[in-house]
Image 1 (cartoon, rainbow over the protein chains, first blue to last red):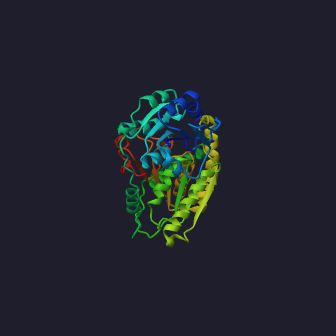
Image 2: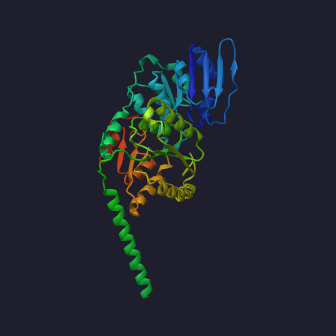
Image 3: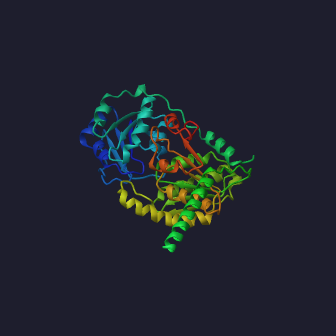
Length: 165
Length: 216
């Protein structure tokens, strides 16, 4: 059972949820070989109706304490461009498509999506270009994501604050 | 006429004194060796909290007690913090009796809030942040960019300016800032003791920042 996990983190991203749950998007997702779509909608006001047919299931929820399980079970993650959501998916080695919210302040999320795309770790698009991207993308070209190194932070901080071992 | 002159001179003297204090506080680096230090962590919503908890996770138990500051409307961060602390206590029994505290202050700015109203909400947050900082008197403030952190850091700076306590202010710009700084970053770049960026393009633009690579 191939599963797509859609997440907007703690935000509200109605355009994205509306776009991905529209009938033609669902058809496209099914035609690409997926038979389950999970929508984590956060604070959004667009709440699609969940359903389950023989060939396809749509689940919808707002929040969970941890998205680890849903990410782990997913074959594809389509996420808003929040750093937390992106990193969680990348660290689990999942193919990641990021959808930019063009209505956010200075569209700062675009920087991270662009950089990680440049490094070959994800694909990105806007709501309007999502269907096109889903059709044309080749997930096998995505590269593994090396995790960050917080130990460098602790080494630096210990030194500058004068912590003795 | 004399009164006006005297008042003007007094105002000028106070201003000069304040500027001097600000300059001294911003310049001073506290190198006293120590065994532990209390830390105040500003946890913004969503990813900000995730990032800051990853940074905290790498710090030893010498950084305690830990005081967390979250926006009053943010339950998700409170849950994440409690899980983080429980997890930490589980993994390291010596941490079992380390106390941590969660404090709540009003948000400086909601997502998409208009800028004029933001001035008022930020001032309101400042009014409430200073008593908190004054009560806690942390050795170090750690933050990574949510609007909530500006009043907190300014309050911490004020503690130093008033000669009450020098607080080390450490700002880590979020990993999602690759080419440009956040608004909080632009403000706090000049007010923090250590300003850490996670991408080389920012280090180039802000040579005085600290670059350690990607740390979350």
